[in-house]
Length: 182
Image 1 (tube, helix red, strand yellow):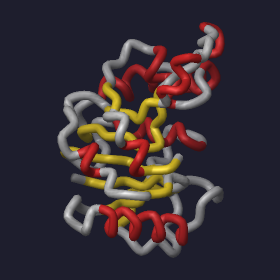
Image 2 (cartoon, rainbow, N blue to C red; image 1 turned 135 degrees about the vertical axis):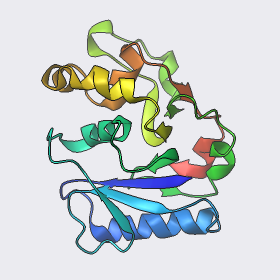
Image 3 (cartoon, rainbow, N blue to C red; image 1 turned 90 degrees about the vertical axis):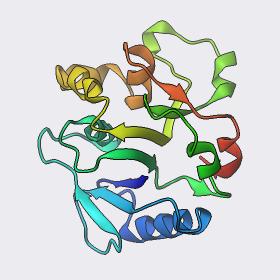
Image 4 (tube, helix red, strand yellow; image 1 turned 30 degrees about the vertical axis):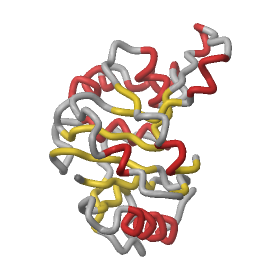
């Protein structure tokens, strides 16, 4: 299984990447696979890096959409952890047995009690921990890239894009919320 940490811009540092990589390795006891940093700036990052494509240029969390491209450098099962996720316990006990046939998100169940405004494109999905099979669901990138400008203006992030577009997805078991703090 490939573990991916996304670092873009200057919100997080190489130290944040290195610290998160170490906490994932410790939580999984080093058996869950290689940890990669998906970034445009490798400076100071101690783990192997994958370059964010220069084109099309995406901002902030929208860089997660590159994970669904048919030329993403990794293959097979992958899990992304946001750098602001605190690992409390081994999250892989909730990840290892999921169905990797569709992208899998955390679900913010507390949001289901809220009134979802159609025009706000609200969501219960949370991509702070995201599992997928690289190069499998490339239709997601195809759908998104048909009109990147429109999609990035319409939706306030990939979670809302997945929730409101015709995309198949799953959610992790509730227990993953016990293993990470978002």
